[in-house]
Image (tube, rainbow, N blue to C red; front, side, top):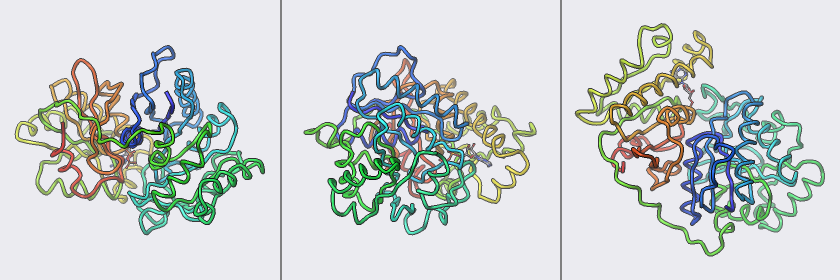
Length: 417
Ligand code: ADP
């Protein structure tokens, strides 16, 4: 194993695994922390998908360290902490605390922070994260139900999450190439600022950063950094078309718990031509609605074609729900309901699931009992179809809230294995 990655959510993990596989690395995706004595998969890169983005920081640290220690024992030479391209976190963490723990566990050398994913409009300039033409804090991420991002300055954001010094490598240095970036990183680390946000505008910049980080014990970022790292990790590896997945077949159900702008538009688009069963968290919490009822509804609809069970709501609706139930309870109620629906449909023989939302995907994949995934072709950038190996194979597409165009659900259904 060359690269061992710990990802803070399931959609991010499939996104990264897809990038690494397309970069020519034999990649395995493991869902959830592996048992301490689990055998190492035979792969160049192993991505462990965790659900640690919004849990208490201490738990996120403990789980991420356990996953990394297993990867290191299995031979991983470089650690890759994967988080969201919109740096989803709160002032309490968990990007800073987890990175800090992994840094202490490795060599306390320079660590880059590279959320950029230019092909999805995420770039960093002068330390400020942009989502297409908007600063992160002006984008829909300011209204995220769990990790509202109201500050675009990543040096400031990260500094609030960790006591480790945070520095910045500006674009003028990146433009001078890999040697300049590496030298700047070493200077910053020597000055006591080893956590380094790096400006990134294009895929070519990711390539420069990938070269600069060669041999760094720990790197952190979104999936974009993999574009720059993969060619260095296995020289001679050729970018490959995605692995062909086995055919699964049968009805396709969509489940949505993301409240991002993109997912709201995708749900509206899907609802124009297909049945949608809405979940109201307050009705669920008060027992006026049940997940069992939503599951029966879906089973009936699936006889005629795809359908969607959705808690997706506008920022105003989310706010009203959170005021009534509290943020955590609102999230738990929705995640539990969608997990219940997924498990119920799985028991009834449904084998193809499209899931929108990072936290939601973690809950649903866990409810489906998935532990390892083969990664196939991408439906949209960062969202591959995957198949869980097991006695009964299941196909899942796990979509990060902000990914995909308006017709995402239709595209996922059309390309389902
Ligand atoms: P994304 O990928 O867009 O960040 P996530 O699934 O990670 O999506 O996060 C969305 C969170 O919002 C989940 O925890 C989900 O349970 C919660 N949620 C979904 N619908 C609602 C709603 N109507 N009101 C409040 N919270 C909600």
